Image (cartoon, rainbow, N blue to C red; front, side, top):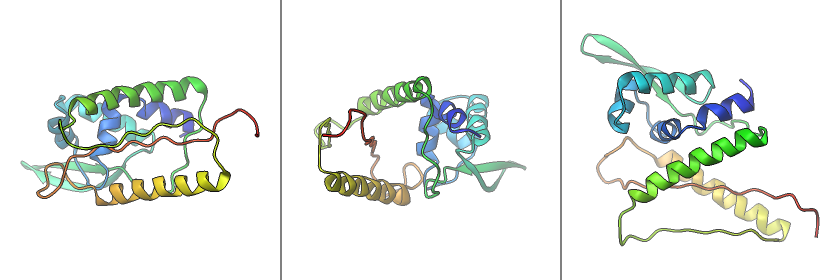
Length: 171
């Protein structure tokens, strides 16, 4: 599937939440429905959209009440191509991420520390390369350590990073 179609598939708040939930653990549509507070049919529909776009993979089966449910996971460790779609698709994705961040901020634990950093500036290329590598390392660490929701001795966190070079010419 094209990068543009893949970007469209994840540019929905429910699907973004699903990808987060499916990082580091395999879940069924029924699991996702309970977790996200949506109907099983709605969860199945969104999961199918993600699977068709290649954003989630099958990760086995689970026996439930005499039946079998497919399990899916988000293969975060794959070297998936970065999405490079048209501006309209990037903006749709940005809006979906912004809506998801608003939801997460509403669930933030009051009085607990967090981190917010924002910069639009001009830095030496070496600083940019090092910062990019550190953000990637942090992302991989958290994705690899992610466990099923409500696992004992875990904390519920939000981690979003968006770092990119901007147009504007050389200094």
